[in-house]
Structure formats: C-alpha cells, structure tokens
Length: 414
Ligand SMILES: C=C(O[C@@H]1C=C(C(=O)O)C=C[C@H]1O)C(=O)O
Image (tube, helix red, strand yellow):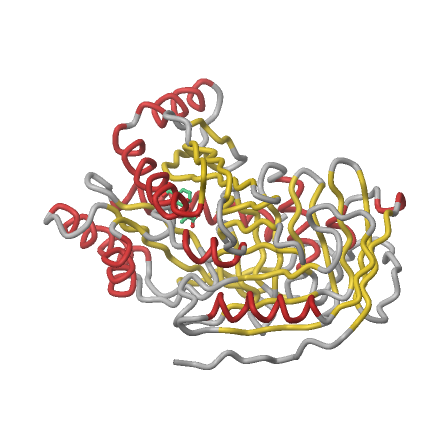
C-alpha cells in the first residue's frame, strides 16, 4: 500500500479572520488563474488561493491520516477568529479519490480564504499572507479552439459495457451499478479555470461550483454537510433530459412516475441512510423524492437530515457514507468490482467527495460530478456516469452521459 505523502508539514502560523464588507462582489471572480479553490452556491461559500500546506494521501487509512494531520495542523496554529461561523478560521479544502485506498486524495490549506454566508463576508489569512483582495480580472480573449476525443471507451464499447452490466443484474449478481465514461478535450490556447468557474457558477446557481487542485465542476449532489451536530445530505439518482415547452413538463412527470428511476433512487437513499444511521440519534428522509431541475437535466432528489451522536469527525463520516449507490451501486462491493471490470478507466477523484472543513469540524463535501480534471497540456478530461439497473437501455444511458457532459461543455464552449 502506498504510504501517505506529506508534501508539506504543519508549521506554526497565525491565522486571522476579519469581517469585511468589501467582499460583496462575485466570490468566483476573486479566484486566481493558478491554484484557485472554490466551493460556491448561489453566490455564497468559500474561495481560496495560495498553499499554506498540502497533503496527498492514499491507502486504507487515507481519511483517518488526513483527519489526524488536520487536527495536528490546526493545533499548531495561533487562531484569531471572532466571527466563529462554519467556514471562518483556517479551512482545509479536499478532493478525495473515488477509491481513496487505491488512488490519491488531495488536501490543501489555502493562504487566503474569502467567505460569505447570509450576506456576511470575511477573509482569513494563514501565516504572513496579506489580507488583500485581488481586483477581479477581466478575462481576455474568447473561448479557446477545442478538440474532443474519446476517453477510455468509445461510445459503442461503453454501450456494450452497459449491456454486460444489465446481463449481470438480470442474472441476480447485483441490483445497481453506476458506469461512467470520460471525454478528452484539447484546447488552444490553454483552458482558463477562471472562465470555466464563472460560467459554471452563472449557469448552475443551485449547484456547488468547486475547484480543488485542478478538478473543477458544478455538482448538484451534497454528500454530507456538518454544522455542529446537524448533518444533511442531498441524494440524487434518477435523471431525465430537459425538453422544450410542454415536452419539458411531460419529461418531468415521467421521471417522477418512472418505476425504474424511483427504484434506482431508493437504492441511493437507502445506502446513505444505512451508512449514516449508526452515527445519528435522529435521521429522517422524506418518503417521496422531489424534482431538482437544472439547466441541462432533471433529477430525483431527497434531502436527508440528521443529528449526530458520538464523536466521529467529518472525514470519518464522509469515509463511512462514501461511496453511496448514487455513484457506485448496490451491493457496494459487487458494484465496485464491476466498475473496475467494465469501465476500463481510472476514475481518479471523479465521483469522490469534494469540499472543505474548518478547525471546528464543520464543513461540506459534495460528490465531484459534472466536472473535469485539467490536464498538463492545457486541456481537460471530462467525466459523466449513470446508474444502471434492470431495464436500463444502452442508448438512453449514453444520451444521459451526453446530457451530463453538456454541463461542463457549455462552460468550455461559451
Ligand atoms: C454519476 C453521475 O451522476 C449520478 C447519477 C445519477 C443517475 O444515474 O441518475 C444522478 C445523479 C448522480 O447521483 C454523474 O453525473 O457523473
């Protein structure tokens, strides 16, 4: 097993949070071109830059190692934080691998974090970083020239993988598996993450626009939020395309009434509830899903809320609930094995938890969906997947991945 790689060690530093009224512009406009971090929804959340510390970790104790490292790091800090709300004081951004045992998860402590919640803006600095807001830079030039290429599997081969998965489900091997594809894009000139984040944030205000170590996206799915003892999660599974005019309403009603999508959704909610229950004194999920309508697709959605008991930290809770059946399948081990067998690609941090936590242990982790990983050549690798259950049809699943890719492609092409 790979050992945790501590690429920079905790060092004693002073961190200061100050309430600032001049942070009222668009948070995402503050993100710099290099090493920018974000977690923003409806104009609120956190953005950061600079690297006060960084941890790359993998192996069976990856998340426990990261939690211990963050505890040690924050214990060594001299913290001045009069605001004391979730996200003030020192913050750790994290992008956890889909398989944290086999692949690398990345954690970054920014030198500067700008936050906003309920209209209150603040800035936190770590070490000697100046508490200066950059001037939002106008972006020069238009969209770059783009060329797309198949990722690991071409569409026909991916459809054959869906057929193979349905055959395994019909044979009774498992109930659900989430199969994903990647799509490669090269860009000339190189992609500018600032443009991508601004466009994602504008088009998907109800999603969390995230950026951590070159993984960028706008996810509609919240794996786990912890504020004190309050836990919440937004589970998604079951997807339909958007249509024009009356067709859009028809597609929405069909999704809500679809036995197949409802069954797929129930598996995802059950997987989260089962994993979270042992950590909660109370946990409630509505009996019926709601519709979540986004610019490109519509989902069945269930908001689960709970009260934590015991002393588990946020990363331990995240490790306990991930991967839910929204991104892996049911039963989990069989679905994970089938993904390894059929997908033909390394998911890396796609479909893994992504988000932030503070020194109190409050934080939010979503699932890294509707996203892309920037590549060293200035391009990107896009990801999209969908839940396969009995009755899934390859052509419809392929179309669903295309609709999901479109979220990031719109940001690339605009
Ligand atoms: C796997 C993805 O999305 C997940 C799968 C869904 C589905 O199969 O209906 C819906 C939302 C997400 O939980 C993705 O966007 O890549």
